[in-house]
Structures are given as C-alpha cells and as structure tokens.
Image (cartoon, rainbow, N blue to C red; front, side):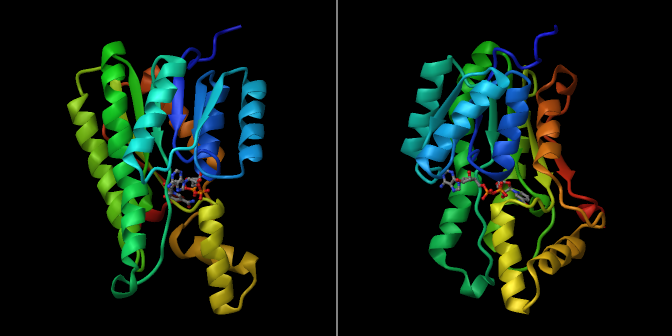
Amino acid sequence: MQKPQLSGKTALVTGSTSGIGLGIAHALAAEGANIVFNGFGDAAEIAKLQQATAKDYQVETLYCNADMTKPDEIAQMMQDATARFGSIDILVNNAGIQHVANIEDFPIERWDAVISINLTSAFHTTRLALPKMREKNWGRIINIASAHGLIASAGKSAYVAAKHGIVGLTKVTALETAQTGITCNAICPGWVLTPLVQKQVDARAAAQGISIDQAKRDLVSEKQPSGQFVTTDQLGALAVFMCSDAAIQVRGVAWNMDGGWVAQ
Ligand code: NAD
C-alpha cells in the first residue's frame, strides 16, 4: 500500500475544535499528518476528538488551548507543538469569529477581538512557524479567509477588514518565500453551515419571524448562486491539494470556494 501523502508531516490548525478547522484537520489526518488541535470547547469533548482522530487515521495528536488573542499563549503553543513533533510543517490559520453591527454601533471591544483573532494571530503563528519551515525547505501555510476577503457586506466592517487583511498577508508571505519549498495561500469560503453561521441563521429567523429552514435558504440564496452551502469536506479537500507536490507553484492565491458568490 502507498504511504499517505502527508505521512511524517505535522499540521497545526487553529480553531480546529469546530466547523471548518475540524473538517480540515480531519482531511489532513486522513492523508497521514499528525494534528495539533487548537480552539475552545469542553475539555472532555476535545479529549474525545483527539483520541478519535488518532485512532481513525492512525496519527498522533496534541491539543493546545492557546487563546488566539494572546501573543504569549500563541508563542507557547508553537513551542509546545515543535517540542512534541520537531516542527510544524503545515500551518492552517483558521480561528475566527464574527460580529454583525453597523460601524457607528460597532462595539470597540468586538472590533479589537475580530481583528486580533481573524488577522493578527496569523501574523504571530506565521512568523513563529517560518524559521523551521525554512530550515527544512518545506512548508504549507493556508489562511482561511472568506468571500469577505474579496468583497464586502454591510454590517461586517471588522470581519471584512480582517479578511481583506489576511489576503494581503497571504500575498506578502508568498512573496517572501517564493524561492523556497514553502507556499502560502488563502481559501475564501462562501457560506458553510458551522456554529459561526448557525448564529446568523438563528438571528435572521428571530428578526424576521421565519423558520430556521427558511432562514437558511434565504441566507444562502441571497449570496450564492448555487443555492447550496459549501461543506467542510470540500474545503478539506482543497487544503489537501494545497499541501500536495502538484500545488508547489500555487503561491499567493485567494481561492474562492463559494458557490459562485464572487463571480457576480
Ligand atoms: P466555528 O465557530 O465553527 O469555529 C471557530 C473556531 O475558532 C472554534 O474552534 C473556536 O473555538 C475557535 N476560536 C474562536 N475564538 C478563538 C480564540 N480566541 N482562540 C482560539 N480559538 C478560537 O467557525 P467556522 O465557521 O468553522 O469558521 C472558521 C473560519 O472560517 C473562520 O476564520 C471564519 O471566518 C472562516 N469562514 C467561515 C465561513 C462560514 O460560512 N462558516 C465562511 C467563510 C469563512
């Protein structure tokens, strides 16, 4: 039997206790990568997740509870992951939050939190992962941006600013590593039905007095011509491709997987 393509590699996926991060972590584990989980949640549930991933995919796992708003905790996570596995070969900057309000009503504390989790944390993980990647002359950095990294929606100032920012960071990282075996790219998903989006569905249903199912249909069809949610498995498959040898010249892209959202 052929060895899985990422066997012997270690992937750190921020915000991987839920949603897209978890889907990408599983897809990378299925290709043989050891997984460093990060994110919030119930300790017993996270321990179960770690054990199930290790067993199902025959890989090693570690969990770091770093809060991505805290540079010293991010540094500790990078140190712990490197101490355990020798290096972080694949870095997926995925942790993210959303807050919806018009600019004049936007709470300052929420602005700071969105920018720090969705953008600044990726600067810290990237700057700390790059030296080892350069030593090995191999690395993959995947930034989970959004359709909102390419276009805007009203009410999402901090999120759109952070996501446009991470697309910029992706391009700079790609240029600074262009002549190495390290690549950096962004994935720009459209709507994916995760807890982050479920909150927006629930808010829409409550505000308009419609059913949850109707709110889901309205939310998707308003932006995505396909009328379908993107799935975490589909995003996982794109991340695996970005980690493959075939993707070595894919550098600095912001790849939308969004049911046609930004084609309009
Ligand atoms: P989610 O809420 O399911 O998961 C978010 C993850 O981030 C969780 O593991 C959570 O614990 C973690 N997290 C939140 N704050 C953190 C912090 N301070 N420190 C460490 N971890 C923290 O959300 P999701 O929908 O899976 O979103 C994942 C990423 O995908 C985000 O960057 C989001 O902006 C992006 N995205 C989501 C969608 C969508 O439709 N769901 C679309 C485009 C982009």
